[in-house]
Length: 84
Image (tube, rainbow, N blue to C red):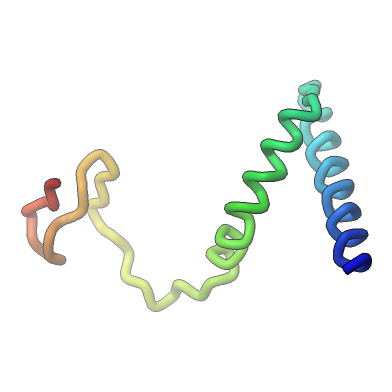
């Protein structure tokens, strides 16, 4: 338990140093609240983002004509969008 806690503290310190030094390049200062929010977001979304970055998507067909302003079609190849 103590090892896990000390590792989490080290990870949090490394995260804080990484964020502060990265933002300092752009002369942006952050306070403790902003750092805690960024750390919480990283904990929530970081693992999924990292998994997506290393995923082999070479077999996934590209979405041609993708329009993020419209919902996806009900069936592939169908122009009828899903409405709710």
